[in-house]
Image (cartoon, rainbow, N blue to C red):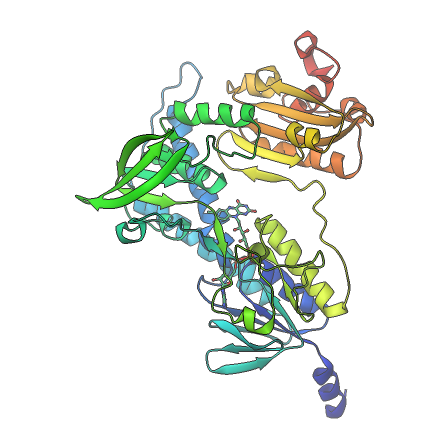
Amino acid sequence: MSDCCAHKSESKKIHLVIIGGGSAAFSAAIKGSELGAKVTIINDGLPIGGTCVNVGCVPSKTLIRAAEVQHRARHHQFKGIASDSKVTDFKALLQQKKELVESLRQAKYLDVVADLPDFRLIEGRARFAASDTVKVNNETIKANRILIATGATSYIPPVPGLEESGYLTNVSAFELTELPESMIVLGGRYIALECAQMFARLGTKVTMLQRSPRILPTESDDLTDELTRYLIDEGIDVVTSVALEQISKEDGKVVVKAKVNGQEKMFQAEHILVTTGRTPNTKNMELENIGVRLDDKGFIKVNDQLQTSVRNIYAAGDVVGEPMFVYTAAYEGALAAENAMNNASKERDYTALPWVIFTDPQVAGVGIDEQEAKKQGIDADVSKLPLSHVPRSIAARDTRGFIKLIRDKKTDRLIGARVLAPEGSELLMEVSLAIRHGITVKEIVSAFHPYLTLSEGIKLAAITFGKDVSKLSCCAT
Ligand SMILES: Cc1cc2nc3c(=O)[nH]c(=O)nc-3n(C[C@H](O)[C@H](O)[C@H](O)COP(=O)(O)OP(=O)(O)OC[C@H]3O[C@@H](n4cnc5c(N)ncnc54)[C@H](O)[C@@H]3O)c2cc1C
Protein backbone atom coordinates (compact mmCIF):
# COMPACT_ATOMS: atom_id res chain seq x y z
CA MET A 1 0.00 0.00 0.00
CA SER A 2 1.35 3.42 -0.95
CA ASP A 3 1.83 6.18 1.63
CA CYS A 4 -1.11 8.08 0.28
CA CYS A 5 -3.57 5.18 0.75
CA ALA A 6 -2.30 4.01 4.12
CA HIS A 7 -2.81 7.56 5.34
CA LYS A 8 -6.32 7.70 3.84
CA SER A 9 -7.50 4.48 5.48
CA GLU A 10 -5.99 5.63 8.82
CA SER A 11 -7.87 8.90 8.67
CA LYS A 12 -11.15 7.08 8.05
CA LYS A 13 -10.80 5.05 11.23
CA ILE A 14 -13.40 5.65 13.90
CA HIS A 15 -11.76 6.81 17.12
CA LEU A 16 -13.37 5.03 20.07
CA VAL A 17 -12.43 6.61 23.38
CA ILE A 18 -13.18 4.51 26.45
CA ILE A 19 -13.26 6.14 29.87
CA GLY A 20 -12.45 3.58 32.56
CA GLY A 21 -10.08 0.63 32.54
CA GLY A 22 -12.06 -2.28 33.97
CA SER A 23 -13.69 -5.32 32.40
CA ALA A 24 -16.32 -3.40 30.44
CA ALA A 25 -13.60 -1.15 29.01
CA PHE A 26 -11.28 -3.98 28.01
CA SER A 27 -13.90 -6.04 26.23
CA ALA A 28 -15.06 -2.87 24.45
CA ALA A 29 -11.48 -2.14 23.40
CA ILE A 30 -11.02 -5.62 21.97
CA LYS A 31 -14.35 -5.53 20.12
CA GLY A 32 -13.74 -1.98 18.89
CA SER A 33 -10.31 -2.95 17.63
CA GLU A 34 -11.68 -6.07 15.90
CA LEU A 35 -14.14 -3.81 14.12
CA GLY A 36 -11.35 -1.55 12.91
CA ALA A 37 -11.39 1.31 15.41
CA LYS A 38 -8.53 3.34 16.73
CA VAL A 39 -9.01 2.78 20.47
CA THR A 40 -7.96 4.84 23.47
CA ILE A 41 -8.55 3.71 27.06
CA ILE A 42 -8.28 6.31 29.81
CA ASN A 43 -8.10 4.94 33.35
CA ASP A 44 -7.59 6.44 36.75
CA GLY A 45 -8.33 5.56 40.38
CA LEU A 46 -7.94 1.80 40.50
CA PRO A 47 -5.03 0.19 38.69
CA ILE A 48 -5.71 -1.06 35.18
CA GLY A 49 -8.19 -3.93 35.24
CA GLY A 50 -10.53 -2.03 37.57
CA THR A 51 -12.55 -3.55 40.38
CA CYS A 52 -12.71 -7.25 39.57
CA VAL A 53 -9.05 -8.14 39.31
CA ASN A 54 -7.69 -5.60 41.80
CA VAL A 55 -10.18 -5.19 44.62
CA GLY A 56 -13.17 -7.40 43.84
CA CYS A 57 -13.66 -10.89 42.42
CA VAL A 58 -10.05 -12.06 42.40
CA PRO A 59 -8.81 -11.01 45.86
CA SER A 60 -12.11 -11.96 47.50
CA LYS A 61 -12.36 -15.39 45.88
CA THR A 62 -8.78 -16.42 46.57
CA LEU A 63 -9.07 -15.36 50.22
CA ILE A 64 -12.47 -17.05 50.52
CA ARG A 65 -10.87 -20.28 49.32
CA ALA A 66 -7.98 -19.88 51.76
CA ALA A 67 -10.46 -19.33 54.58
CA GLU A 68 -12.38 -22.42 53.50
CA VAL A 69 -9.23 -24.57 53.58
CA GLN A 70 -8.56 -23.36 57.11
CA HIS A 71 -12.18 -23.92 58.19
CA ARG A 72 -12.61 -27.38 56.69
CA ALA A 73 -9.41 -28.68 58.20
CA ARG A 74 -10.95 -28.12 61.60
CA HIS A 75 -14.61 -28.74 60.83
CA HIS A 76 -15.35 -31.97 59.05
CA GLN A 77 -17.52 -34.97 59.80
CA PHE A 78 -15.09 -37.81 59.13
CA LYS A 79 -14.13 -40.11 61.96
CA GLY A 80 -10.51 -41.06 62.51
CA ILE A 81 -9.03 -37.95 60.97
CA ALA A 82 -7.70 -35.38 63.37
CA SER A 83 -6.55 -32.18 61.77
CA ASP A 84 -6.07 -28.69 62.95
CA SER A 85 -5.36 -25.45 61.21
CA LYS A 86 -4.84 -21.81 61.98
CA VAL A 87 -3.57 -18.72 60.24
CA THR A 88 0.10 -18.53 61.15
CA ASP A 89 1.20 -15.83 58.71
CA PHE A 90 -1.52 -13.46 57.52
CA LYS A 91 1.06 -11.30 55.73
CA ALA A 92 2.20 -14.29 53.64
CA LEU A 93 -1.40 -15.05 52.70
CA LEU A 94 -1.96 -11.45 51.63
CA GLN A 95 1.32 -11.41 49.72
CA GLN A 96 0.23 -14.53 47.82
CA LYS A 97 -3.07 -12.80 47.00
CA LYS A 98 -1.14 -9.73 45.80
CA GLU A 99 0.99 -11.85 43.47
CA LEU A 100 -2.09 -13.51 42.02
CA VAL A 101 -3.75 -10.13 41.41
CA GLU A 102 -0.62 -8.79 39.73
CA SER A 103 -0.15 -11.82 37.50
CA LEU A 104 -3.80 -11.87 36.40
CA ARG A 105 -3.78 -8.11 35.82
CA GLN A 106 -0.82 -8.58 33.52
CA ALA A 107 -2.06 -11.73 31.75
CA LYS A 108 -5.74 -10.93 31.40
CA TYR A 109 -5.60 -7.19 30.83
CA LEU A 110 -2.25 -5.64 29.88
CA ASP A 111 -0.97 -8.53 27.73
CA VAL A 112 -4.31 -8.84 25.97
CA VAL A 113 -4.28 -5.27 24.64
CA ALA A 114 -0.53 -5.10 24.08
CA ASP A 115 -0.81 -6.25 20.46
CA LEU A 116 -3.94 -4.35 19.47
CA PRO A 117 -3.22 -2.14 16.48
CA ASP A 118 -3.71 1.60 16.93
CA PHE A 119 -4.34 1.28 20.64
CA ARG A 120 -3.37 3.72 23.38
CA LEU A 121 -3.65 3.50 27.15
CA ILE A 122 -3.63 6.75 29.09
CA GLU A 123 -3.42 7.01 32.87
CA GLY A 124 -5.38 10.00 34.04
CA ARG A 125 -8.78 11.33 35.13
CA ALA A 126 -11.06 11.93 32.18
CA ARG A 127 -13.80 14.51 31.94
CA PHE A 128 -15.89 15.80 29.08
CA ALA A 129 -15.13 19.11 27.37
CA ALA A 130 -17.86 18.51 24.78
CA SER A 131 -19.93 15.55 23.67
CA ASP A 132 -17.13 14.48 21.31
CA THR A 133 -14.16 15.74 23.33
CA VAL A 134 -12.49 14.37 26.43
CA LYS A 135 -9.88 16.08 28.58
CA VAL A 136 -7.24 14.08 30.40
CA ASN A 137 -4.08 15.33 32.05
CA ASN A 138 -3.27 18.32 29.82
CA GLU A 139 -4.51 16.71 26.66
CA THR A 140 -7.70 17.27 24.67
CA ILE A 141 -8.85 14.20 22.75
CA LYS A 142 -11.44 14.17 19.98
CA ALA A 143 -13.51 11.04 19.51
CA ASN A 144 -16.12 9.78 17.08
CA ARG A 145 -17.60 7.50 19.73
CA ILE A 146 -17.14 7.49 23.50
CA LEU A 147 -17.85 4.69 25.95
CA ILE A 148 -18.21 5.47 29.65
CA ALA A 149 -17.15 2.43 31.67
CA THR A 150 -16.11 4.05 34.92
CA GLY A 151 -17.63 1.43 37.23
CA ALA A 152 -18.79 1.92 40.79
CA THR A 153 -17.33 2.20 44.27
CA SER A 154 -18.54 1.45 47.79
CA TYR A 155 -21.58 3.42 48.87
CA ILE A 156 -20.83 4.99 52.25
CA PRO A 157 -24.03 5.59 54.23
CA PRO A 158 -24.34 9.00 55.88
CA VAL A 159 -24.03 7.80 59.49
CA PRO A 160 -22.84 10.44 61.97
CA GLY A 161 -19.22 9.74 62.99
CA LEU A 162 -18.49 7.09 60.33
CA GLU A 163 -16.15 9.30 58.28
CA GLU A 164 -14.22 10.47 61.38
CA SER A 165 -13.93 6.97 62.89
CA GLY A 166 -12.37 5.49 59.77
CA TYR A 167 -13.65 2.45 57.94
CA LEU A 168 -12.60 -0.31 55.59
CA THR A 169 -14.07 -0.99 52.16
CA ASN A 170 -13.36 -3.75 49.65
CA VAL A 171 -10.36 -1.68 48.56
CA SER A 172 -8.62 -1.57 51.95
CA ALA A 173 -9.95 -4.78 53.56
CA PHE A 174 -7.96 -7.02 51.21
CA GLU A 175 -4.81 -4.98 51.92
CA LEU A 176 -4.74 -5.30 55.72
CA THR A 177 -1.38 -6.29 57.13
CA GLU A 178 -2.70 -7.84 60.34
CA LEU A 179 -5.67 -10.16 60.72
CA PRO A 180 -8.22 -8.13 62.70
CA GLU A 181 -9.19 -9.57 66.04
CA SER A 182 -12.76 -8.27 65.55
CA MET A 183 -14.77 -6.63 62.78
CA ILE A 184 -18.22 -5.12 62.29
CA VAL A 185 -19.52 -5.68 58.77
CA LEU A 186 -22.19 -3.20 57.69
CA GLY A 187 -24.60 -4.69 55.15
CA GLY A 188 -26.21 -8.03 54.42
CA ARG A 189 -25.95 -8.58 50.71
CA TYR A 190 -23.43 -10.52 48.72
CA ILE A 191 -20.21 -8.59 49.33
CA ALA A 192 -21.03 -8.27 53.04
CA LEU A 193 -21.78 -11.98 53.36
CA GLU A 194 -18.69 -13.14 51.50
CA CYS A 195 -16.36 -10.85 53.47
CA ALA A 196 -18.00 -11.63 56.82
CA GLN A 197 -17.60 -15.38 56.43
CA MET A 198 -14.10 -15.08 54.99
CA PHE A 199 -12.77 -13.00 57.89
CA ALA A 200 -14.63 -15.10 60.46
CA ARG A 201 -13.11 -18.30 59.09
CA LEU A 202 -9.64 -16.78 59.16
CA GLY A 203 -10.14 -16.06 62.85
CA THR A 204 -11.74 -12.62 63.20
CA LYS A 205 -14.74 -12.22 65.50
CA VAL A 206 -17.36 -10.85 63.08
CA THR A 207 -20.61 -9.02 63.74
CA MET A 208 -22.87 -8.29 60.77
CA LEU A 209 -25.24 -5.34 61.08
CA GLN A 210 -28.00 -5.39 58.49
CA ARG A 211 -30.71 -2.74 58.11
CA SER A 212 -33.39 -5.06 56.66
CA PRO A 213 -35.11 -7.73 58.77
CA ARG A 214 -33.18 -10.40 56.80
CA ILE A 215 -29.88 -10.82 55.01
CA LEU A 216 -30.37 -11.03 51.22
CA PRO A 217 -33.79 -9.42 51.64
CA THR A 218 -34.81 -9.89 48.02
CA GLU A 219 -34.52 -13.67 48.26
CA SER A 220 -37.13 -15.97 49.80
CA ASP A 221 -37.27 -16.53 53.59
CA ASP A 222 -36.37 -20.22 53.48
CA LEU A 223 -33.10 -19.47 51.72
CA THR A 224 -32.04 -16.57 53.90
CA ASP A 225 -33.15 -18.26 57.13
CA GLU A 226 -31.11 -21.34 56.38
CA LEU A 227 -28.03 -19.37 55.32
CA THR A 228 -28.32 -17.20 58.44
CA ARG A 229 -28.37 -20.35 60.56
CA TYR A 230 -25.17 -21.65 58.98
CA LEU A 231 -23.40 -18.33 59.49
CA ILE A 232 -24.48 -18.18 63.12
CA ASP A 233 -23.33 -21.80 63.60
CA GLU A 234 -19.87 -20.68 62.49
CA GLY A 235 -19.83 -18.01 65.18
CA ILE A 236 -20.84 -14.95 63.14
CA ASP A 237 -23.14 -12.60 64.98
CA VAL A 238 -25.87 -11.75 62.46
CA VAL A 239 -27.92 -8.79 63.66
CA THR A 240 -30.85 -7.62 61.52
CA SER A 241 -33.36 -4.72 61.64
CA VAL A 242 -30.53 -2.40 62.61
CA ALA A 243 -30.90 1.39 62.43
CA LEU A 244 -27.44 2.95 62.78
CA GLU A 245 -27.37 6.06 64.94
CA GLN A 246 -23.80 7.05 65.69
CA ILE A 247 -20.32 5.70 65.12
CA SER A 248 -17.31 6.77 67.17
CA LYS A 249 -13.78 5.70 67.97
CA GLU A 250 -13.04 4.91 71.61
CA ASP A 251 -9.76 3.46 72.94
CA GLY A 252 -8.77 2.39 69.44
CA LYS A 253 -12.08 0.55 68.86
CA VAL A 254 -14.93 1.48 66.58
CA VAL A 255 -18.14 1.81 68.58
CA VAL A 256 -21.52 1.62 66.87
CA LYS A 257 -24.66 2.89 68.54
CA ALA A 258 -27.78 1.54 66.89
CA LYS A 259 -31.41 0.69 67.42
CA VAL A 260 -32.13 -2.99 66.87
CA ASN A 261 -35.84 -3.66 66.53
CA GLY A 262 -36.32 -0.35 68.31
CA GLN A 263 -34.01 -1.16 71.24
CA GLU A 264 -30.79 0.77 71.93
CA LYS A 265 -27.68 -1.42 71.39
CA MET A 266 -23.91 -0.85 71.27
CA PHE A 267 -21.40 -2.85 69.23
CA GLN A 268 -17.66 -2.50 69.16
CA ALA A 269 -14.78 -3.93 67.15
CA GLU A 270 -11.28 -3.23 65.96
CA HIS A 271 -12.48 -2.42 62.41
CA ILE A 272 -15.68 -1.59 60.62
CA LEU A 273 -16.12 -2.77 57.03
CA VAL A 274 -18.65 -0.89 54.91
CA THR A 275 -20.39 -3.10 52.35
CA THR A 276 -23.73 -1.37 52.03
CA GLY A 277 -23.98 -1.18 48.25
CA ARG A 278 -22.30 0.42 45.28
CA THR A 279 -22.39 3.97 43.98
CA PRO A 280 -21.55 4.88 40.37
CA ASN A 281 -18.38 6.73 39.37
CA THR A 282 -20.11 9.56 37.53
CA LYS A 283 -19.03 12.57 39.56
CA ASN A 284 -16.79 15.37 38.26
CA MET A 285 -16.97 14.24 34.66
CA GLU A 286 -19.11 17.18 33.48
CA LEU A 287 -21.76 14.72 32.29
CA GLU A 288 -24.53 17.19 33.09
CA ASN A 289 -22.94 19.81 30.80
CA ILE A 290 -23.05 17.58 27.75
CA GLY A 291 -26.54 16.16 28.38
CA VAL A 292 -25.78 12.61 29.57
CA ARG A 293 -28.72 11.81 31.81
CA LEU A 294 -28.33 10.05 35.17
CA ASP A 295 -30.91 8.34 37.37
CA ASP A 296 -31.65 9.51 40.93
CA LYS A 297 -28.71 7.47 42.29
CA GLY A 298 -26.27 8.82 39.70
CA PHE A 299 -26.14 5.73 37.45
CA ILE A 300 -26.03 6.52 33.73
CA LYS A 301 -29.35 6.03 31.97
CA VAL A 302 -29.00 3.90 28.85
CA ASN A 303 -31.41 2.22 26.45
CA ASP A 304 -31.21 -1.52 25.74
CA GLN A 305 -28.53 -0.81 23.15
CA LEU A 306 -26.46 0.84 25.90
CA GLN A 307 -26.68 4.23 24.27
CA THR A 308 -26.91 7.22 26.62
CA SER A 309 -29.08 10.26 26.07
CA VAL A 310 -26.29 11.59 23.80
CA ARG A 311 -26.14 9.77 20.44
CA ASN A 312 -22.40 9.11 20.15
CA ILE A 313 -21.90 8.27 23.84
CA TYR A 314 -22.47 4.76 25.16
CA ALA A 315 -22.09 3.37 28.68
CA ALA A 316 -21.53 -0.14 30.04
CA GLY A 317 -20.77 -2.08 33.21
CA ASP A 318 -21.41 -1.11 36.82
CA VAL A 319 -21.82 2.55 35.91
CA VAL A 320 -25.22 1.75 34.34
CA GLY A 321 -26.43 -0.17 37.42
CA GLU A 322 -27.75 -3.70 37.93
CA PRO A 323 -26.75 -6.37 37.14
CA MET A 324 -23.29 -5.55 38.50
CA PHE A 325 -21.10 -8.55 37.71
CA VAL A 326 -17.85 -8.79 35.84
CA TYR A 327 -19.28 -11.08 33.18
CA THR A 328 -22.19 -8.72 32.52
CA ALA A 329 -19.81 -5.74 32.43
CA ALA A 330 -17.67 -7.50 29.81
CA TYR A 331 -20.76 -8.49 27.81
CA GLU A 332 -22.09 -4.94 27.90
CA GLY A 333 -18.71 -3.46 26.95
CA ALA A 334 -18.49 -5.58 23.80
CA LEU A 335 -22.13 -4.98 22.91
CA ALA A 336 -21.82 -1.22 23.37
CA ALA A 337 -18.65 -1.12 21.26
CA GLU A 338 -20.34 -3.08 18.49
CA ASN A 339 -23.40 -0.84 18.50
CA ALA A 340 -21.22 2.26 18.60
CA MET A 341 -18.97 1.12 15.76
CA ASN A 342 -21.66 -0.21 13.44
CA ASN A 343 -24.49 2.16 14.38
CA ALA A 344 -26.19 -1.13 15.24
CA SER A 345 -29.07 -1.68 17.61
CA LYS A 346 -28.31 -4.99 19.28
CA GLU A 347 -30.12 -5.19 22.60
CA ARG A 348 -29.00 -6.48 25.97
CA ASP A 349 -30.52 -9.87 26.74
CA TYR A 350 -30.46 -11.06 30.33
CA THR A 351 -32.75 -14.04 29.90
CA ALA A 352 -31.61 -16.75 32.33
CA LEU A 353 -28.76 -14.74 33.83
CA PRO A 354 -27.05 -16.90 36.46
CA TRP A 355 -25.58 -15.32 39.62
CA VAL A 356 -23.62 -16.60 42.59
CA ILE A 357 -22.81 -15.61 46.15
CA PHE A 358 -19.57 -17.23 47.23
CA THR A 359 -20.50 -18.03 50.79
CA ASP A 360 -20.22 -21.61 52.00
CA PRO A 361 -22.73 -23.02 51.26
CA GLN A 362 -22.92 -20.94 48.12
CA VAL A 363 -26.11 -19.24 47.06
CA ALA A 364 -26.79 -19.46 43.36
CA GLY A 365 -29.76 -18.41 41.31
CA VAL A 366 -31.09 -18.11 37.81
CA GLY A 367 -34.46 -17.03 36.49
CA ILE A 368 -37.29 -16.17 38.84
CA ASP A 369 -38.20 -17.65 42.21
CA GLU A 370 -41.65 -18.68 43.40
CA GLN A 371 -42.43 -15.22 44.83
CA GLU A 372 -41.68 -13.55 41.53
CA ALA A 373 -43.62 -16.21 39.59
CA LYS A 374 -46.65 -15.44 41.75
CA LYS A 375 -46.25 -11.70 41.17
CA GLN A 376 -46.09 -12.31 37.42
CA GLY A 377 -49.25 -14.44 37.57
CA ILE A 378 -47.48 -17.59 36.34
CA ASP A 379 -49.08 -20.86 37.38
CA ALA A 380 -45.85 -22.28 38.80
CA ASP A 381 -44.93 -25.13 41.07
CA VAL A 382 -41.83 -25.67 43.14
CA SER A 383 -39.69 -28.68 43.85
CA LYS A 384 -37.39 -28.29 46.83
CA LEU A 385 -34.86 -31.01 47.45
CA PRO A 386 -32.81 -30.94 50.67
CA LEU A 387 -29.21 -32.00 50.05
CA SER A 388 -29.76 -34.82 52.52
CA HIS A 389 -31.27 -36.61 49.50
CA VAL A 390 -28.29 -36.08 47.22
CA PRO A 391 -25.80 -38.99 47.30
CA ARG A 392 -22.80 -36.72 46.66
CA SER A 393 -23.65 -34.62 49.71
CA ILE A 394 -24.38 -37.67 51.84
CA ALA A 395 -21.01 -39.21 50.94
CA ALA A 396 -19.25 -35.94 51.60
CA ARG A 397 -21.06 -35.76 54.97
CA ASP A 398 -22.09 -32.22 54.23
CA THR A 399 -25.81 -31.97 53.58
CA ARG A 400 -26.24 -28.27 54.24
CA GLY A 401 -28.68 -26.63 51.86
CA PHE A 402 -31.17 -27.47 49.15
CA ILE A 403 -31.91 -27.29 45.45
CA LYS A 404 -35.10 -25.55 44.47
CA LEU A 405 -36.50 -25.67 40.95
CA ILE A 406 -39.43 -23.60 39.75
CA ARG A 407 -41.40 -24.61 36.67
CA ASP A 408 -44.27 -23.30 34.65
CA LYS A 409 -46.95 -25.95 35.15
CA LYS A 410 -48.55 -25.29 31.80
CA THR A 411 -45.43 -25.91 29.73
CA ASP A 412 -43.37 -28.10 32.10
CA ARG A 413 -40.48 -25.72 31.40
CA LEU A 414 -38.12 -24.51 34.08
CA ILE A 415 -38.40 -20.81 34.85
CA GLY A 416 -35.98 -20.53 37.74
CA ALA A 417 -33.77 -22.17 40.33
CA ARG A 418 -32.28 -21.32 43.70
CA VAL A 419 -29.46 -23.40 45.08
CA LEU A 420 -27.98 -23.28 48.55
CA ALA A 421 -25.15 -25.80 48.51
CA PRO A 422 -21.41 -26.18 48.93
CA GLU A 423 -20.07 -25.48 45.41
CA GLY A 424 -23.71 -25.06 44.39
CA SER A 425 -22.78 -22.54 41.69
CA GLU A 426 -21.54 -25.43 39.57
CA LEU A 427 -25.16 -26.56 39.21
CA LEU A 428 -26.47 -23.38 37.72
CA MET A 429 -25.47 -23.72 34.10
CA GLU A 430 -27.64 -26.77 33.45
CA VAL A 431 -30.70 -24.89 34.65
CA SER A 432 -29.63 -21.72 32.90
CA LEU A 433 -29.37 -23.53 29.55
CA ALA A 434 -32.63 -25.35 30.22
CA ILE A 435 -34.43 -22.04 30.79
CA ARG A 436 -32.80 -20.37 27.81
CA HIS A 437 -33.60 -23.19 25.43
CA GLY A 438 -36.99 -24.19 26.79
CA ILE A 439 -35.94 -27.65 27.99
CA THR A 440 -38.71 -29.33 29.96
CA VAL A 441 -38.49 -30.97 33.36
CA LYS A 442 -39.38 -34.27 31.67
CA GLU A 443 -36.32 -33.92 29.42
CA ILE A 444 -34.03 -33.18 32.36
CA VAL A 445 -35.34 -36.26 34.16
CA SER A 446 -34.62 -38.41 31.11
CA ALA A 447 -30.98 -37.24 30.84
CA PHE A 448 -28.13 -39.21 32.43
CA HIS A 449 -26.57 -37.49 35.45
CA PRO A 450 -23.55 -39.41 36.77
CA TYR A 451 -24.02 -41.05 40.15
CA LEU A 452 -22.34 -39.26 43.01
CA THR A 453 -22.06 -35.94 41.29
CA LEU A 454 -23.71 -32.86 42.68
CA SER A 455 -25.43 -32.40 39.32
CA GLU A 456 -27.45 -35.50 40.09
CA GLY A 457 -29.22 -33.22 42.55
CA ILE A 458 -30.75 -31.31 39.62
CA LYS A 459 -32.18 -34.53 38.23
CA LEU A 460 -33.44 -35.57 41.66
CA ALA A 461 -35.04 -32.17 42.19
CA ALA A 462 -36.64 -32.46 38.75
CA ILE A 463 -38.01 -35.91 39.64
CA THR A 464 -39.34 -34.48 42.90
CA PHE A 465 -41.97 -32.48 40.96
CA GLY A 466 -43.89 -35.70 40.56
CA LYS A 467 -42.47 -38.23 43.01
CA ASP A 468 -41.49 -38.62 46.64
CA VAL A 469 -37.69 -38.60 46.40
CA SER A 470 -37.26 -40.77 49.49
CA LYS A 471 -38.89 -43.62 47.54
CA LEU A 472 -36.23 -43.61 44.82
CA SER A 473 -33.61 -46.30 44.48
CA CYS A 474 -29.96 -45.65 43.66
CA CYS A 475 -28.93 -43.43 40.75
CA ALA A 476 -31.93 -41.15 40.61
CA THR A 477 -34.31 -43.64 39.01
C1 LIG B 1 -15.66 -7.28 46.73
C2 LIG B 1 -16.23 -7.55 45.37
C3 LIG B 1 -16.32 -8.84 44.90
C4 LIG B 1 -16.83 -9.10 43.64
N1 LIG B 1 -16.91 -10.39 43.21
C5 LIG B 1 -17.43 -10.67 41.99
C6 LIG B 1 -17.48 -12.01 41.52
O1 LIG B 1 -17.04 -12.95 42.20
N2 LIG B 1 -17.99 -12.25 40.30
C7 LIG B 1 -18.47 -11.23 39.51
O2 LIG B 1 -18.95 -11.49 38.41
N3 LIG B 1 -18.44 -9.94 39.93
C8 LIG B 1 -17.92 -9.64 41.15
N4 LIG B 1 -17.84 -8.34 41.57
C9 LIG B 1 -18.37 -7.27 40.69
C10 LIG B 1 -17.36 -6.90 39.59
O3 LIG B 1 -16.10 -6.68 40.16
C11 LIG B 1 -17.82 -5.65 38.85
O4 LIG B 1 -19.16 -5.84 38.42
C12 LIG B 1 -16.97 -5.35 37.63
O5 LIG B 1 -15.61 -5.34 37.97
C13 LIG B 1 -17.37 -3.99 37.02
O6 LIG B 1 -16.55 -3.71 35.92
P1 LIG B 1 -16.59 -2.28 35.22
O7 LIG B 1 -15.70 -2.38 34.03
O8 LIG B 1 -18.00 -1.84 35.01
O9 LIG B 1 -15.98 -1.25 36.27
P2 LIG B 1 -14.60 -1.25 37.06
O10 LIG B 1 -13.94 -2.56 37.00
O11 LIG B 1 -14.89 -0.66 38.39
O12 LIG B 1 -13.68 -0.26 36.23
C14 LIG B 1 -13.87 1.12 36.19
C15 LIG B 1 -12.51 1.81 36.11
O13 LIG B 1 -12.69 3.18 35.73
C16 LIG B 1 -11.91 4.02 36.59
N5 LIG B 1 -12.48 5.38 36.58
C17 LIG B 1 -13.54 5.86 37.28
N6 LIG B 1 -13.75 7.16 36.94
C18 LIG B 1 -12.82 7.48 36.01
C19 LIG B 1 -12.54 8.68 35.27
N7 LIG B 1 -13.27 9.79 35.38
N8 LIG B 1 -11.48 8.68 34.42
C20 LIG B 1 -10.72 7.57 34.24
N9 LIG B 1 -10.96 6.41 34.92
C21 LIG B 1 -12.00 6.37 35.78
C22 LIG B 1 -12.02 3.28 37.93
O14 LIG B 1 -11.07 3.71 38.88
C23 LIG B 1 -11.79 1.84 37.46
O15 LIG B 1 -10.43 1.56 37.28
C24 LIG B 1 -17.29 -8.03 42.83
C25 LIG B 1 -17.20 -6.71 43.29
C26 LIG B 1 -16.67 -6.47 44.54
C27 LIG B 1 -16.56 -5.03 45.00
